[in-house]
Length: 175
Length: 129
Image (cartoon, rainbow over all chains, first blue to last red; front, top):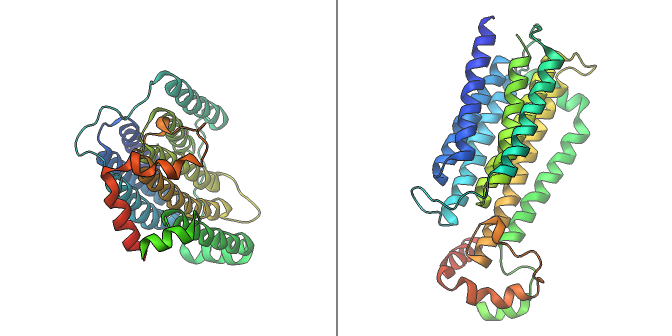
């Protein structure tokens, strides 16, 4: 057990523990805040695994943007403040499938890697990863930017009620 | 560094995400559980980047960045759909969505069903313009 192992164990325990709270808590807003703890612990994991850029992008995009979007959605759908009892469906199929997937994958990976140790590679800094992306992965990167644009346009079209269905009738009604 | 520790963490997080997707009724909580699953995949990719020596170095971390961008796109479109569902039905419970109903009925039913929460539609419409 080196220092990195201890850090990985602690951060993994924090991530799994707050993940359990995300899927079991009765408070909608608290689920979002536990998600912040979980994603932060994962960012710490990435730092220990020498993935610097991924860790900071995780903090920026996940904790900064995605969780804020989710909390906005909680607010806009007028979620009740405080505990609500009707958040869950009957649990046994979910427990069966979730537990089966999680424990099965864990058993598979434990069997594959046992207690072997590997040396950490050189750190994935922004410079090194930028070189990789713009040398080896340029085409996927550009396709991804087009996909992001398409997703944003799709979200705008979806959230405007005056686009798509009976546009002239709705337009006269509005003016 | 023992790679089995982050691998097991990722497997357990994936299981928790699958459990949450199947267990939760609220669509926003379902999206949160999907985020957990995507993060588990990211952790697998970053850990595999340290254990596998590939021809292109740091391929796993590049893929993790790509997955983060995909997750951002997914949550944007997903929340747009959830808000539209709330506007039409005044509920975000995923097991109350009538899948068998023909879509032509939906606009005719809007005023009767929504009634009270008509102002989120108005405020959103004003914001959109």
